[in-house]
Amino acid sequence: MERWQISEAIDAFSIAIELTSDSYYSRSPIYLAELLFELGEFEESERVIRPIEEDKRNEGFDELWLLLGNILEKLNKDEEAKEAFQKVKYMSRK
Figure 1 (cartoon, rainbow, N blue to C red):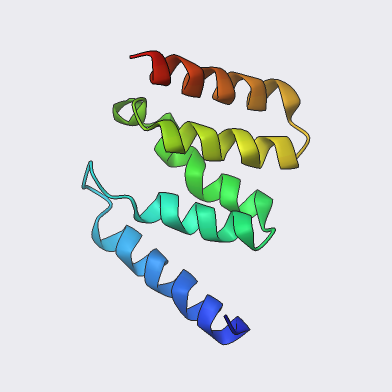
Figure 2: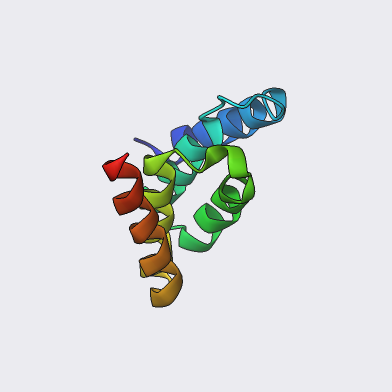
């Protein structure tokens, strides 16, 4: 994927997030955070995913907690990463 295509994808995700910000089921922020994570933009990925994580309606999204744990691990926030991974483990038992 070319750099300009990545920029366009990030812009498209950002627009989708704005358009669906009130929607409980919007996965656009998670997809954007995943893309940023894959690009090595860990701080930006955390910035995108934190509002989703803080919304208590999203507690059941195990992929959210797994991604957050991976982001925090890359940022050397080991205790927070451990907490996120524990939530994934808890979700998988339900």
